Length: 332
Image (cartoon, rainbow, N blue to C red):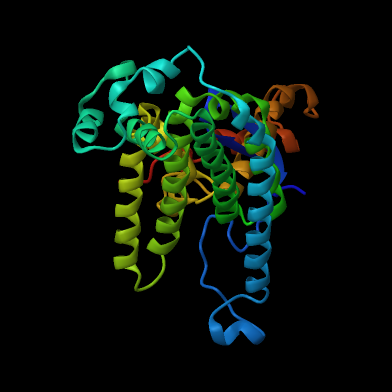
């Protein structure tokens, strides 16, 4: 399966900044994956509607899996509703915070955007706690319910963004389920003061989904206006994520990694060699480097005079290679 084996790394810091590394086999012919986004070729009954054969069935399957994933994560974390507030940071964020306990008022909204309480500037996090107090009052189960719902939605968003980028439904489900059900997320979900984690992850994932849609729309013909709108929406979601937790400042670097793989924007722009060319070139380099020291010993004349062995020709070929082809940046 040479060429199909890749390492799928999903780096999402929600909770304790957990990183899952999952080895998958993403087929090169996936309708979503690949370095180039080719025009869709329609055949069969669905050609009239501009859809791939089986596209509606695929959407239905993704929707059903999303509902089941949401219910599974919700069911696992639902016992957190029986928990109360704790004395560690919950008093700063909710129980002893007068502005938060008063609920949503114009004064409190202004306070949220100016306050540096808890050594953070995260106005949306403050507003979410105020909304909880407005709806549930001092009852802790309501605050826990909001965090559980956010985390359950986040697991579904992880599934969507992976399917959107790779087209691998079942492997995306495995990673999303691992993200949603992993015990390391208990702290973020069951601790009211950690609302900023699940809230910022919500906007982080929405930004990723919108950005991937922007990249795929950008190369489509006559879709420039739509691409600009998607880009603006991605910027807005990114700003909302920053207002939930400052750690979202690392998101642009993740988007840059997505440009490299699986979106392949860097290859299309000529900033890096195509993956297949890089693999073949590295294999040739390794063979030639190994061959050079062995050339004198394996040559017919013992290393004296002119040699004509295959290894010698390989070594000469390596020494004459055009190193300009190895530049990481395009020629100016």
